[in-house]
Length: 444
Ligand code: ATP
Image 1 (cartoon, protein in one colour):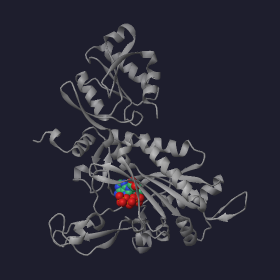
Image 2 (tube, helix red, strand yellow):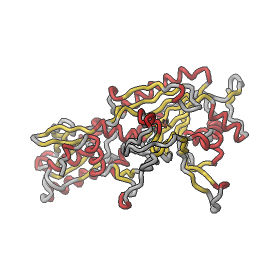
Image 3 (cartoon, helix red, strand yellow):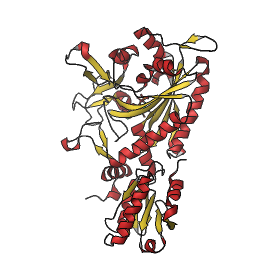
Image 4 (cartoon, helix red, strand yellow):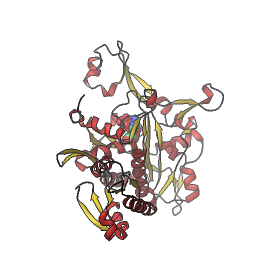
């Protein structure tokens, strides 16, 4: 059997993610389903912490942002209007020998040599493959009932532009934000959470006047960079790529990809695009509903332009896991742990009784655990195995603080608090614990 130490680091992270309940293969007991993953108890907390931080930073803490949560299945005319029914495609080519399918633009030089990267067989001609998942709405299954699972959250925002304007009368510039699922029938899902067929996006459409686009593009570029810092991504791993004309989506006049140095290469983490007035104008024309905006002061009426910062949530979870994964030696053992920003960790504080067979310690530890839980900290209780093993379990899920109730606690009401990264321990008075933890896990 191969020792875990001999496997590539990416495989070790995937294995930790499974072992510690972050991410499981989708429909695993049936052999899985390509391009789908399920979040387990720790993963869903990590993902929610990222979502909540994003929502707080970009929606709740600002006066110019409005949140929506639109339906995943939308009227198919939405996708016709913006060209997705015909154009939401990736180039596909198939091996004539082994029948495997590849994205032509991912094949590099092999696309020119027309050789299958798997079996060396001949590759067929490249053709466009539409990635939208089709379904039928209602009891009749014919072409009139076709609908699509949304391939991006953006259109749920554009179709609600008028609703938000009519309800809140916001002044330009303002943004509408949405977090939600998107679906793409990717030709080759791969690299764990990186390329999946069902994923979550956190998107903003920021409405502006046309002549302001360069200014707000730069503002969002800076804000996106700041965000990568706030989730603990090392700046040496973030690269901004100016996307050239031919590679840009048809609606975009400028796009910057924020790439991350993944173990499988430098790849897109987020995108920032200037979408002009393409979407609002297309929906106005197709629906015959006026989606222009009237400036209350000048009376001027026009269709706003838009800057779109788009963040993939699952790629964020992956980057945060990769960035946090650390190996060091404690004593003479190799320790694997997740050095997550404390405010993103799935568990903030774990409580242990030193010995599980000493009822005074167990009772005190349970009581303390309950007190901390009532203070709204996300807590864990563990009395299984020796303290070293318990520390290691918490380290692997990135718990920043572990508290042990020991015999000294019974004498002077202090507990041992152990720090995940340094392994150092200090004694803290029980009645000062709330403040102590608050300070240690507060947001940047
Ligand atoms: P790629 O070039 O990698 O296919 P894209 O340019 O098509 O990505 P966008 O349409 O700009 O991606 O989507 C915005 C964001 O949604 C991406 O930056 C990424 O974080 C996320 N995303 C897109 N496709 C996927 C996917 N298949 N799996 C996971 N996340 C995705």
